[in-house]
Length: 348
Length: 106
Image (tube, rainbow over all chains, first blue to last red; front, side, top):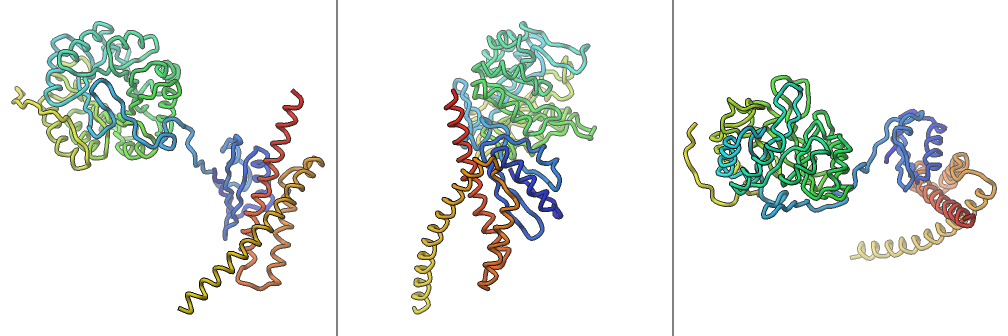
């Protein structure tokens, strides 16, 4: 920690700050500059920076260590690679997760799974328990939805990710899904995070709607601290004053998280934008910025979707996006969907 | 060639001076350690700002008489470092004492 004193701080003020830091068991390195005094503070004592900031003569207190440990790059310099069967998340290959917002019917799940698989997606997404802003919106199919999603994923050799909203759902979802998703609204549901830390399945942790990077990494820390080391962070847009888009997709999170943490970072341009016509440009930008993967809403018939139809892509749009990403990824030394994909003309 | 020889000679000189400085720092640290023990016995705090200010004023005065390239501020900055370390020595000793006392009681 570094304590910067005010330009006109008196000797007594400086001495009082040093005295309280020494009393807290810290070593203080006093540096007297031309106009200011800076105190370098190191040691094993416990100091609340806010208490020091409140002392007379203190200009600001800068923390130099992060409050999260296991999630930090300092703790683990090498990138975390998460393996699910033959799937590697966080390696050179950019992994695309795609599928409908919610499971609605067998036909819908199968048609969408077939479409995203053909385009090069590796993981199927889909909700069975839906956290909706309104209690009157469609709430999801529950376990029946999980069964449909698992069958759809199996039929097309895809892994499955689905959202867990509550600790009581961990067991049932664990029977069907390969990855648990924690939604933006639950990012700081610490009891849920703690329970997920006890599981041994990867967790896709979405960034809260108004969460800072530090709060987000601290949420990941809850899962890691429980012994589950497979956490994927997912940027999905944050609340800003802009009303044109549903959220403001914060792509700056990609390089920042890459610096602060070893965990893989995904981007969800569908929720970030809220409009299907704006999803592809942001998906391309995310891959170019170094995202380890994308999660995209695709629906076989978005106009009749029971939730999030406006932000779900048509299969033909998704197909084209994947073709574009296959050109972008190699420019930054990444690959995307290695195996050849059968091409075909889409109906729409 | 002559410049190279001069450079080598001056560097040798610096190495010898450093040996003396480290010996002196060692003697100073031993004193500071004893001071720490006495402060502990007398129940006085490790950090005594008035004493630190007096040390700096003293070395500034000594330095001024020498009239070399180091100005008073530079000497003060160097002494801030030296006293940082002295405080650290006293803190470590005080912590060791406290630990031993606690263990002794149990």
